[in-house]
Image (cartoon, rainbow, N blue to C red; front, top):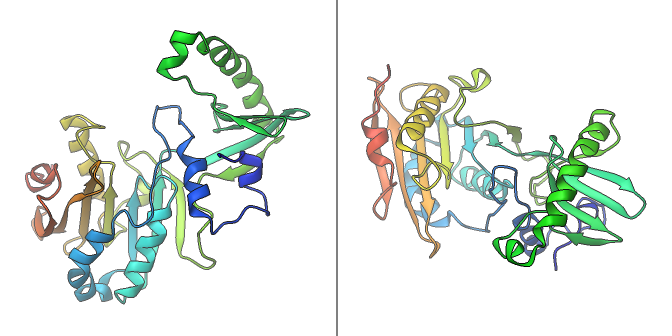
Amino acid sequence: MTVSARKFYSANFNAADLAAESAFFSRLKMRNGTFKLTQVSRFRELEVAFRSIIMDRAHSLHQVLDVGVSTGLTTVELAHFLKDCGATVQITATDLFVQAHIVELFPEVTVFCDPEGWPLQYELFGVPIRPWIRRLDYATFAFIPLLLARTTLQPRLCSRIRAGRSNKVQMITRSLPQHCEIDFIEDDIMSPSEHLRGRFDLVRAANILNTNYFSVDQLKTAIANVYSYLRGPGAMVMVTRTSRTQENNGTLFELKDDGSFAVLGRVRGGSEIERLLLDFRKT
């Protein structure tokens, strides 16, 4: 059973219970229609395939960017993997939705929402309730109270957040070890970020840059942004997508002296957008 946001973020929640954590986040639907879905060891086969390459370059890996990290669970695993390979790194983990608020509207009525007041979970008398509308809800007319609640409450939630009458939290894994060098920030891969420019020795884009989410033109924009975030020649980019059968198709690229990308290694058939990276040229 899904726990409420108040319970999840309380000191009493068992941070080691990754199944309960996954169940909590998987029920949260962001305002762009995506869910906070992730799984333990999702990218283990990439670690096995690329281990020798990463170990050979461990001495040059210092700054790592992990893009579209969802809850950051696999970012923690990436940190462990890089450490096992002999690299000492600082990881910047980005996602479109990181910040959230727990707002108590009335006694026994609490809303978990994003900074724009978009409801992610209602809690009524201790019972968590989903705020998002399913297709079935249109057939049963259950969408009416859900739509009314969101429309009515969103302005009130925004007002309370602006007034500082909320508990600000982050939608990231509770399994984050102490002293783990990971900085979580909100960022849109489609918009260039000056504070990320020219910083990173390795960029991982896992389950984000694919044709299911974006058009070819959007993917080209994202690739140009990723390029701008790389430190320079020798920096690497890892792109992968997990299938419904939990198999990864990924490619590890290296940035060459002329600004083009070359393939260092593949898992299965490689990334579905591999050709877009190989055809990329700085403009």
